[in-house]
Figure 1: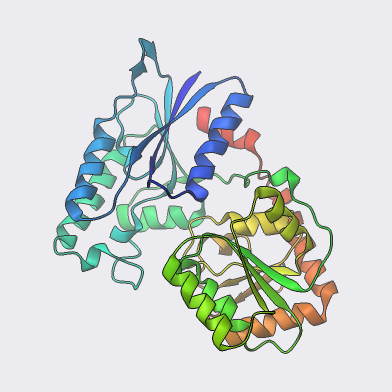
Figure 2 (figure 1 turned 180 degrees about the vertical axis):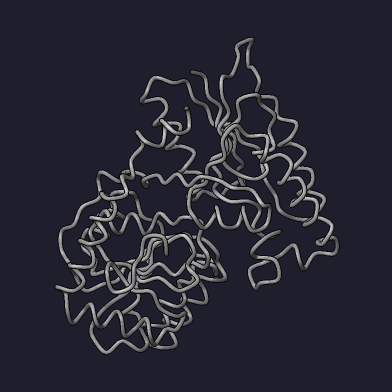
Length: 347
């Protein structure tokens, strides 16, 4: 079968969405299909540019290429899911959240634009119209499903998938550091972990890996310098996949501070490494997996409370180990594997 994976790309930015598309392509190829990722560039400002991107999504012709029919389109992101195709399936990562749940929050931007209200209305109306064209509507997490139902009145089916190289994650021990590997961004809240280290009473450390917002990195660096945390908070920058897996294998536990995450590979990577996870009450997708005091902790966005939980693991490694093993069992119970995913997408 010839399958086009329709998505968007913000130039020079790579993250979980891009990995998702690549994994899907590779897994389809393993099963004998011809798959190709088709992207359109995306820029979210000014409002007129968002409209141009929406038009590009609708104007994409993926019915055939080089005289050969494309059998199916699997669309992942806004506005690529506007594409016209007789056999279009949605596996929705998220919509343009600025028009939905981020509207009016500190993380929003459309609401602060001059023509923001009109753009928001256009996005919502267009989503309602073009999403319903799909033969099947899947989403990557319950959090995404709830938004789609709440704002657009559209029902969907959750289809979980494993993270990249999930079968290579392992546990080697429970050392003295909390690990957090993610794009550094205000919504990921690495700063909370850095600030928590001011209040820990043990010798626990924090290892924060990743690149991203220069302003946010400078904020974290300032916290480290002001509070003399050079030996307590380590910023590694970019890590290779092998380095990341090794850090997971040896950490005491994982902090995942993201706000209202769609899915959250970090939770799954942690559990495949048999490590417990700290998340917040407003974490979104990770709350579908993290159960307080069973396989991790769910707490407020409060550095002092995060510090206390880190100290609890440091002082009781057996508790951290038990929670991490519970997380690993959850991955097995939920049958998070690609065979099931591909079967559903191509049915």
